[in-house]
Amino acid sequence: MAEAGEQSKHDAVSATATAAIEVHEAIQKKLQSQKKQLKTAGSRMKTRKSTRTRQRIIDAAKEIIDEKGTTNFQMSEVAARCNMSKGALYYYFKDRSQIVSIVNEEIGQGIISAVEDISSHESSAVDALQDICESFAIALSGNRAGFGALLGEFMHRGYDSVNGLDNRYGKLAALTESLIERGKKEGAVDPEVNTSLVANSLIGMFMFAAASYLGQEDLMGTSEFSSQLMGIVLEGIGTKQGVQNACQDLC
Image: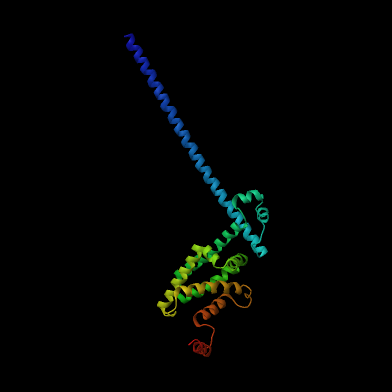
């Protein structure tokens, strides 16, 4: 009997100890889960704050570029505009070129979005191309310095800068090529022309013509600008006699 009583006590103590261990482990798991949740929430808050800070820096750089008319700003100017130290600024961006690259990226993406929207809504390829001309002029009028920086990069680096635009330029070229093909089907574009060559030529003409338009905004509106540019695209600038003479010379 005594032995049975001792065994019963031992079993009871063991059961209590086991239950205590299980409770302790459950509490530890819950605490670890809470810590993980807090860490994840903190990480998300830190990420959101970091994103906001980066955008604040980009916006400040845009303001300075617009005021100076050039991308040749100092990192200290951006830091002062954002009320932060240069050290804090370098935590987010390693140098000025990285900031300028992002500004150019935003400009390029804005142009692509406009072209995509126009291409999907206009009733004809010619109308779409004319609206693209006009949208270039409007967009660039509101972002002179930024577009100037984009053109400056192209002029300085040449074809290498086109390669650097990779996805942006590729999308723009693909959209323009689809409009050229659409124009061929609609009878507005010569079916014999090389689509890729024409698309790349149009992109260059639109961009550089829009840049030159910025100094003539008082002389013509954006609609007049786009109409004249499309006249050059579809009809050329030569008279019939001039075209005939050129053909004779070439032949």
